Length: 336
Image (cartoon, rainbow, N blue to C red; front, side, top):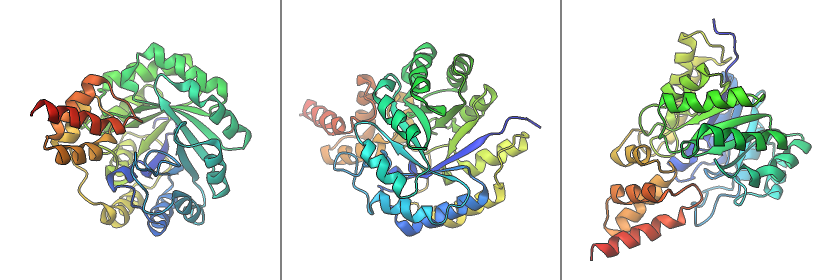
């Protein structure tokens, strides 16, 4: 038996929002949250895919205001921490205050992997407000282990409870993950978490590599629902962890039921690795760009591949969704 407790963070109702064009309703949030809570999941994240206040023309409008989803879910979550994601520059401290009033008990403050300093005030406020607070570094493949350590220390000094590393493009291999998690584990006294996308089919392997290097918080979603080819599939991850003797505190059979009976009927398409989602991982492009890219490709008579390869070449990062249309227009003009 492996002695470390592995904390499972479910982000079906946040990252999964990308895959359903932010169409979750309060009733769906209640059903999913109640099932996950009963299954023993410790943190249940609910937000627009791009964090609280993400509902916009640039990122996609939510079908129902996220504060209504958070409030509804808070009524059925008995044991887990109801968690929200906040990206400084999209969400504000006032948005976070509103989320807490509606039942949020934890926040993960996310920045690009080299921009932790823009989250200092948000993390400090959240800690003072009594929220369990996480520093979340996105697009981790774009920085060296040494740079990641530097940025994580900014979160730690601001008061974060743990540091979460995100392979937002699904670009990393297990060796990439090991190098970054090991560096954090050796340099930062806080717990370490990991968030993976399955664009190269490596999310479970990468999550296991993170755990083997000392990560104790792992993100996952039911049926892998999420941006790009999706996230680490929670029912698969927990079954594998159980086989390997790790203590997750979750009921794997109950998770399988939530995934199959509650989440799968909500999905607009199977969460599989298609060519365009594979290209996200191949080119190192932010996973939530996928649906935006498909729409731009159709509008300008291009293939998603042409756009994604160019986005990767330019090193586009989260928050630059508006550039997808600009890139598609430029590419279409080159062909005239």
